[in-house]
Image (cartoon, rainbow, N blue to C red):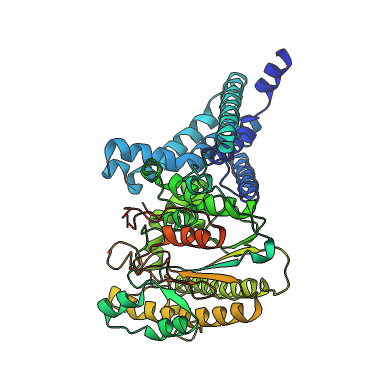
Length: 514
C-alpha cells in the first residue's frame, strides 16, 4: 500500500485512468451490445486525444505537473461535456444559461482563469495527484463490479427484448423429421415496404404487377396485413420470437430498447427452435450490432456513435450545431457534404449488391443440412438513393427532399424493390431445393423521411410461399407475429396457437436526435 501511495503521489496516472474510465463506463452501460473492435477503436482515439491535449498543455505551461493538471481539466470538459450539459438542461431547461453561447463562453473564461492560476501559483501536486489517481481508480473498480453484474444478467437473457422464449418453450414435438424433409426457409425483409392495397388507397399507385408475379409463383398474399409495431427492431424481434414484446421492455430507456430488440434478432424463439432442429442459420441483416454474418454498414450506427462521440464536446457541437455549417454558402462546405452523402450512397449500393450475392450464394440443391436465411434490404425505406431501375441518383437529389417529393421518391424505390423481389424469388426457386419456404415482408409500412407523421405506418407487404400451395392455414389479415407459427405448425407439427393480430404504436425519437 505504501508503494502504491507513492506512485499515486508521483505519477499522473489519472491521465490514463480518465479515458479508460470514459470508455469502460460506456461499454458497461451497454454491456454486450458493442462490437469489441468499436470499443477498442474509441479507446485508441481517446488515448490519442489525451496525448494531444497533454502536448498542448505542455506548450502553454512548460511544466510537467502543471501540464498534467491542465490536461485533466480539458479531459473533463471534452469527454464529459454531454453529461454536464444534459444535467444543466435538466435543471434549467432550454434557457440562456444552458445555451451553447453561454456555456462555451463560460468554459473559455474558466480555462483562461485556470491557466492563469497554474502559471502564477505553486500547486501541491502530490496531494492533488493522490486524490485524482485514487478517485478514478475507485471509479474503475466500481465499473468492474458493475460489469461482473451485467455479465451475469446477460447470461440470463437480460440483453434481450424478450427472454421468455414462449413459443420455443411451448414446442413439444410428437414427431421427428429427417433433415432432408425439413424445408429451407428464406426470410426476405424489405424495410418499410407497404402493401399494394395501402399504396393504391392512399396514393393511387398500382403495384399489382408485384402481386401478380407473386401469385403466379404460388405465394399467398396477406392483403390486409398490418405490422405488429411501427419500429423495425420491435417488428422483427416479435416476428422472430413469434410473440409480442413485454410492455415493460418497450417502455424502458429508449436506446436500451433498441439494443435489446436488435440483439433479439440473433437470439429468439425461432432461431433457438431451428438450431435445435439442426439448421444452419445465416443472418444477412444490418440491424444487430454484433452480427458475424454481416460485414457491411449498420443501420443504427448512430447509436454506437452517441455512446462515445456524442457525449464529448466535439460530438455535441457536431450533433447540435453542425446543421448550421451545412446552410452556409461556401463551396468547400458544400463539397464536404456532397462528398459525405456520395460515399453514403455508394456504400448503400455496395451493401445491396453484396446482400444479393449472399442470398444467391446460399442457394444449393445438394446441401445436406437445412438452412434459414434472413436477408434485410434497407429499401424502399429512406434515404431515397435509387431510381425505379435501381440506378443511383445524382447525389444532390438524395440529400434533402421536401415532404411533397418524398412519396414519389419512395415509390421509385418500391419499383426497385419489386425488381429485386422478382429476381431473388426466381433465383431461389430455380437454384435451391424444392421444399423451400419463402417469406417476404415489409417490417412496417410507409413513414415519411423523419418518421414523425404517421399514416400507412402499419400496412405492410406480407407474402408467403409454401411448397405445394397449401394455404388453408393462412388468412387475409395474418400479421408477422403469426407467420412463423403457421410455418412451424405445418412443417414440424408444432401445434402453436395463433395470436391475435394487433398493431402497437410506439412513439420514438430517431437515433442521434435531441
